[in-house]
Each structure stands twice: as structure tokens, then as C-alpha cells.
Length: 427
Image (tube, rainbow, N blue to C red):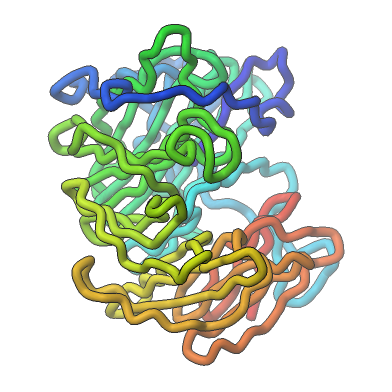
């Protein structure tokens, strides 16, 4: 989960404001390279007590991190789950994030991902402790409604940086890099799923052209899709609109955590990677438009779906609940947009795309699970579509809330991000 650090003098409100992007620059393959052929040794080191800033439980420093990150050895004991209370509107089946809990949700393709049959959410908490000199930013991965299984903390008074936590069937990943004009390497850290505090790190140099800053977009950079022993890292190297700038502004790199270095030297012009098996599905650039593609663990790209002329893929999700993964995506043109779905077998197998329904916001994020899709309409309502029939139902936000993003859907409830945090609505 991405979180931005700034000095307290700038005010905590500045943490949620995106800086202006630099001018677009030509980039070569040498401008992203691993600075070492092996992971940095002894990734987990002891933290001194005065660095804990009021944190409870046992934490250890992560070697090589530019932001002083520390990982919780027992995150469930150190933090506990998020607390929810009855919505202010007192509507039946409506609960909201309890007051005085400050969180931030990352903007990657999957805020909540089904991992080993359990939905897990990656996000950041801001902890303010009365006797601590500065608040703490804690990136967390936790099963929905349960205690965290992974947590990494950093004092907000540290030098400006951004870091994100990510989860997949294989394990956890943490991406850390300088922010807003700072120069330096990106640091990736990773750990197997069954040993979340056993982090290993490696440095990756993002930009080397003279005078160029290393930039991370405040929306969703860097994000990491955790596949089976491959990390798909998306970064933006200059932004001028969502599909412009350097090669759309977005590239995807493959990192091999077992070898501690890039899996392939070159980048792939793509965005919104979602881990699937040993590879990732993504919006890939072809013929100056976004198509549905699959990036294999060796970097080979297979086009899964080439939309009709004048259409391109604008949103993507994966339903992992059944025996086969189901891809769900939106294709848009100037005046229309449609939702499609298809079972995913192998990258070589042709997709049998099914047109599901017309959508009114082609760029709205999609969440898919249990044969249903959760998205938002421009009027602010949440829309639930059944893939088997195309039928829709709608949910309105409580009077004191406004929906911002779908997070999760199952047979019992839906989770949605709001202006004030998170709302859970029983079905």
C-alpha cells in the first residue's frame, strides 16, 4: 500500500496531495537496472527502542530501506484489526470505519485480493501516539475483518519517500523509493507468505539521466503485482494524462525475488498488472491503444483480446473464486462502453469473450468475485452485475457518505471506499 511521507512542518494534509509531474523524457533500458547481482544480506536488523515511536510489540528494521522501515514480527498483536461501528444514519446492515482511525488505500488494480481463499486488503494506517514525537505510517496487509498478517512502519518525520505493500499467493512485497524530487534507488523487499517478517531486499535504480528526479505518481506508483515467484513492478516515468507521456507514462518490469534482480532487462509498455499464475494480465499497448494482454514470467507478451476497431480496454479485474479464474474487463469507444468476461485457461488458449452489459463509466474500477462485479456509476451509486445474466442492482451511499471506489463483494456484504474511510453494507 502506497503512503507518502513529508516533514511535519509541511502539514499532514500535504501527504494526500499529488505533486506535479516532471516533463516527459526519453528513457533507455539502462535507466532501470539492478545495482547488485545479489540481495542485500541481513535484511532484518534489530531496531533501537527510541526508533519505535510508541509502537507496541516487537519490530525490526529493514536493511537498505531509505525510509527507516521496520517490519512487525507479530502484526496481529502489534496492531489488531480495523474497528467498525454502526453508520451514523443507523441503517440496518451498514457499518463504517470507527472514528479516529486514519487510513489510506492504494490505487493499484487490486486493493483487496483473494489469497488462498481469503480476501486480503493492502492499505496504510496513520498512528498517532500521545508520547511519540511524530505519527507513524504503517502499511498493512490484513484479511478483511481480521487482524493483520503483515505490517511495515515508518515515522512520518523521515525524509520524504513513498512505500507500498502488496500481497499474493507466493508472499508479500514492499516497494520503497524517494519522492518528489529526491534522487536514489527504488528498494524492493519481499518475503514468503508463511514467513512475513523474513524480508530480503534489493536496490533497483530508476533514473540516471542528468538532473532528472525519481518520480512516483501519487495515485498508484510504484505498484507491485505478486505472482508465483515473480514481481511485476509498475512505475510512471513522467505523466501527461493516463495514456500519454513516456510510453503512456507507464512501464512494467519483471523482478525475480529468488535471484534478487530483474528477470528481464527491458520494460514492457503496459499498466494495471494483475498477478495471474506465474504471470500477470495487464492493459498492454498495441496499435496505439490498450488491449488485454498476458505478461509471462520471462517477459513474453501474449495478446488475449484485441477489441474491435475504435475500442480499447479501460478497466480490468480477476474473479479468483472458482475452479478457473475469470477475467472481467471494460472496452470503451467514444460513445459507448461494454463489460466483458471470459474464463482464463492458459495464455495460449483463445478467450471466449462474453458481452455482459453496457457500462456508464468505462474507467470506473472493477471488483469481481463469486460471479459478480462491483463498480460505480457516475451518479455515485454502487452497481452490482451478475455475470451469468447481466442483470444489475444498485446500492446508494448512506446520507453522510459518498462512494469513491469499490473494494470487495461476496455473498454476505460489499466493501466500498468513501470520502471518510470505508463502509460495509450487508446484502
